[in-house]
Amino acid sequence: MQGPGVPAGKVVPHPVSTLDLPATFYDYAGLSPSREIHSRSLRPLAEGDATRDFAYNEWDLNASRCGVELTLRTVRTRTHKLTLETGSGAGELYDLASDPGEMDNRFGDPGVAAIQRELADMIRSRPGDARDPPIAPVGMA
Image (cartoon, rainbow, N blue to C red; front, top):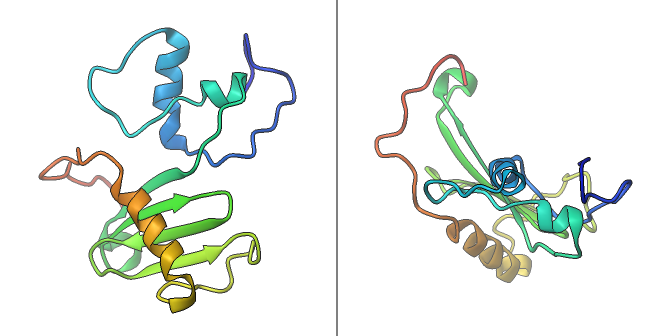
């Protein structure tokens, strides 16, 4: 990031998401969103010494994109990444410290069950404000 109050060359080692951009824009504009949003401002990380436990990501894919409809929810900490497909319950869990290339899927491994539960709880902590019914898809995505 670049701008007033943002130290030049600062590197933030905490996980962030593009979902955080709306809250960041509101924050720098001195505005508040009109409703709860899935976003947290990056300003405290950029300008101060704030920390962050995890970043969250959502990705919904239509069947036209990959042959089957997928509803993916991902949480990433500094050391782990969990992706859940909400329809089937399938998932991927990676230890980013020992497997930064994400080659060894540990999802369902009893040896990391506590970590998997903790990450799944982080996913469930997000606001339940999804549209019902969802917005009709446009195009291939």
